Image (cartoon, rainbow, N blue to C red; front, top):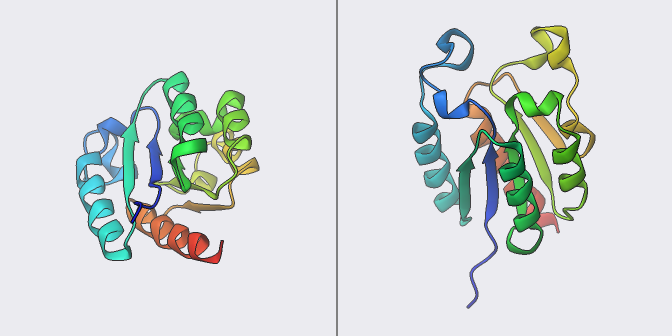
Length: 149
């Protein structure tokens, strides 16, 4: 029996510093902690996840393009690229599956420049302000979306 395609869970710039960078905003969990929690929930839901992080916009674009043939869906925390990357939006627009956007902080309670996200123009849903639990919420929602297709 063939394995179902994985969900690409992509993390953008500075998320490798989770647990160290501004814990009052982003919490004390590390990205590795988040990856462990995501893997456990994915197993419970019968899903597989490729959990990836890059500080480089082009690498994220490459992974989105790879997901076109290799992925069932994309969950993305684009970090600061949310507010700047038309290239990431263009790549996501070429992906046919579901896309969910995650932000650890509530970007709408922060600086005005964070209130706009290019990624949101493609996302089927946005989860913001739930801390790292937002990743698990997104994974549960992705499971629901994939069952519906």
